Figure 1 (cartoon, one colour):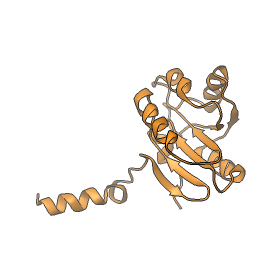
Figure 2 (tube, one colour):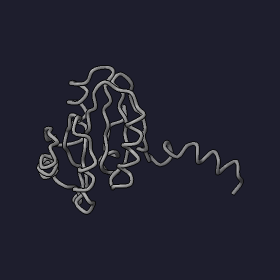
Figure 3 (cartoon, helix red, strand yellow):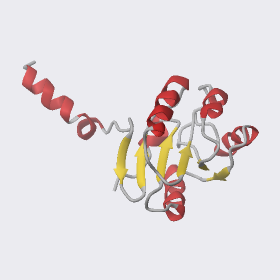
Length: 148
């Protein structure tokens, strides 16, 4: 395959595949970021990015799958964020209520939502224009965000 064709394809990966979610800003004021961080190393990278990002208040929409190390990921999350617990519409998803219970054991509080888009609407309704809304915890969850 010609190198130019490969380069064009790589520049259009999101458009061609629908693959999203590595610190991807989808909205400004408030800033909404999608990130597929779902394990310890991914979450540590995400937290490094948060440290160099300016925002007023942090809102985290979180959903994970059952077969990941949920407890380890939750231990890494900042206590000073507003949390919106949800789950992707897949059998592997950890139910949002169970995720909330695990987070509560770590001192993280928030509310449960039926799906990521309900959680996102709620976060947007409570966010200041200078806030950051972060959607993370699962590739599947990020994939269900309505991009319009």
